Image (cartoon, rainbow, N blue to C red; front, side, top):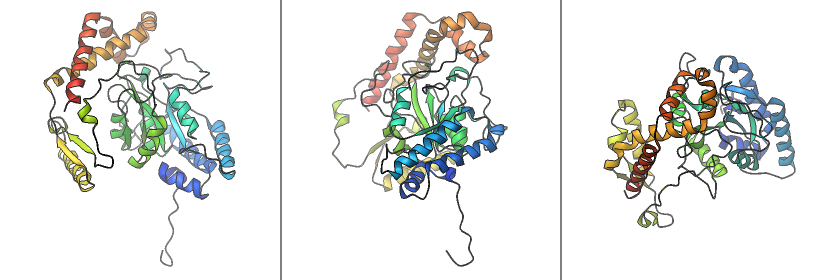
Length: 370
């Protein structure tokens, strides 16, 4: 830095997880100061953004101080030691309310963490609070606003998580997806959305939308942060509701250290894509190839024609199965879009559900062979 230049000092909340972990490890930053910085941003911006249902300020600061004491004693619980996170309010955190974005839900205060929360806690994470979701994590809008333009939507249903991460209220936050509820808010808010293969993360302790389609994932601000977070939530022995078909043995053969082989589905990615996005996708492919990856163009099998209809019918049938007793008692109080979904789900027969699950499995098997 030349004489006379001013050093730009970043607020701790501006750091990525990777940067924050390095600063915490070196002693340049404390977990308490990192959480304080996030809380300061929440206090300053929450009135405009509405990203949070509840903030655990006292508990978070107390936990941050404990993390600092442990760090001084040479103890580090895991890769997220001292990192503050948000949690979508359909995921159970012990001793805290789960409200699911609607007064219709009989709010609960669980005695146990959802497995994904327990894993993050063991990794050293601090929970700042519950983030807003659309009612029952479905397609009626939430009160959350987009931090880049409050007149615009942040997307749903993981609305609060995407907005909170984008607005620097926390470096990462848990969300869920049944259709596009992680990746859409990530796109709308300009952050990274991560959704793993079905069944890789436990859905226990999470409000179900569709037992055989739901995923737990997260929002963060960089791909490097996703690399840190993913092993922290991945289960060694997941118990999915509907297991994926085993891929052919030939697809598993990989020489250790060999470059990755990535598929590109041109007919899907380029069908309704703007020129700007296509340009960015082309650049991403070039970067992957420069780094040594093999890019393979593949096409969808004929069974892809059924995918959209299968998703809708399976989702609606399973959604109604979960809601049926509450819906029968409070039908007129349900928000309109969710009410319409449930009415469709109530009319689906058993043979239709089984038939569409068979189409789904056929598609999975055919894609596994590509």
